[in-house]
Image (tube, rainbow, N blue to C red):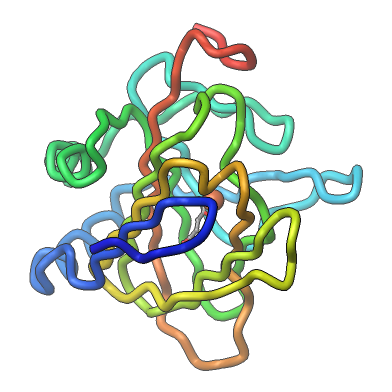
Length: 199
Ligand SMILES: O=C(O)CCC(=O)C(=O)O
Ligand SMILES: [Fe+2]
């Protein structure tokens, strides 16, 4: 269903993936993804990102993030099987996914927009959440008084499209609450011919 916001397009399905399937996918991906600590640039310094990650995609779908180029790892079978349903829900064909594992409430992601050149203008990003519910926050880029947040439960799908990345930043803040580990998958379409990417 549409989640109305100014200057962007969000669609949110809290129970997109049936419970049993979400449970099975979470367990399978915990084991089959090669989790690593990505290095990111913060205030001009390289630091470990506060989460585990893996860049997965079709050959050639490489991605520059925080000035580091990531070559994609191959799709685990369980994710490969899910691709047609993600594509159908998002209305575009995805060729890559950033997997993030937030081990506890101290793991987080800072404010950013997914506006890298290789995503092209008005990117469609489909975010599937598995595991512990965490709060996902939005803040308008020009008017920080415009802000909101939504809880992303196990099996939910959030699709960000239209002008969302151009006008909003988003973050997954830390929390002091007891939270179960959370696995998030942001499916993307890398455009091989956009400046910034290489094939
Ligand atoms: O974990 C999340 O829900 C957000 C991840 C995210 O923003 C990203 O991968 O770009
Ligand atoms: Fe993001």
